[in-house]
Image (cartoon, rainbow, N blue to C red; front, side):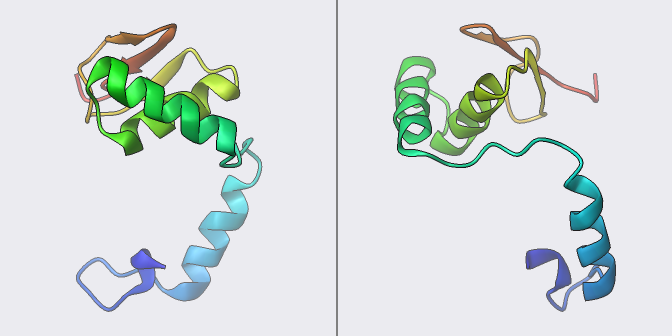
Length: 88
């Protein structure tokens, strides 16, 4: 895991495991072929990175209306999923 690699701000492996366990209470969208195709379509349509598009499409699959991110334009709508910058 990136967070446990030797570097500034490193997280101890047992702490990382505890964090991951605590996050399992939230739904997780598995990567599927359909999700990949949806992300590629969103990537082309909106001119955003594939990775940002995959996050948008995973959120859509889970029924989310908002995605908190500082990588996309604040309040931009991606066909019903809105990017919200939590730092503004």
